[in-house]
Image (cartoon, rainbow, N blue to C red; front, side, top):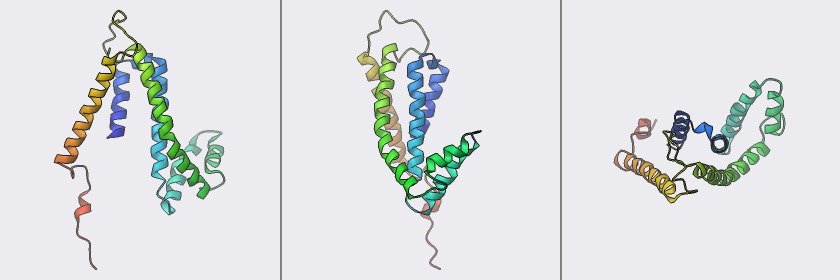
Amino acid sequence: MFFICLYLHVGRGLYYGSYMYTETWNIGIILLFAVMATAFMGYVLPWGQMSFWGATVITNLLSAIPYIGTNLVEWIWGGFSVDKATLTRFFAFHFLLPFIISAMVMVHLLFLHETGSNNPTGIPSNIDMIPFHPYYTTKDILGLLLMIMVLLMLVLFSPDLLGDPDNYMPANPL
């Protein structure tokens, strides 16, 4: 749900031309990359053999970058293969990145509220613009509450809708 909302947010920004607000857009792109990096590092966190496999396979994708790919992979691994030190480093980044993301979200909102966030038609509204207007904040909170309400309705009224039906198969005693 979280990444769906992120992709919808980016799509809305593309549709309404928000890329013209370069500071807000650039912080948003860095935020998207940081969130994806945090999710990846959380994906390889369950300690064990699968962690080594996941980290090896996904970071090996960087080897496709011409000229620097192999060196980049070895630099991320800290050697010629994924080791305990690599997973420890990923764990540290997985812990620290959410704090960095929180700070970047505040900077993103600061830049957004300097220009006004509720002007998708592009009509000049400099006459009524007040920096960091409380109505913009109220609008953002309303959107958050609506999304939480939809998620709660999904979870409370049909909790198995997005689940795997194999979870309810009885175990084979043989």
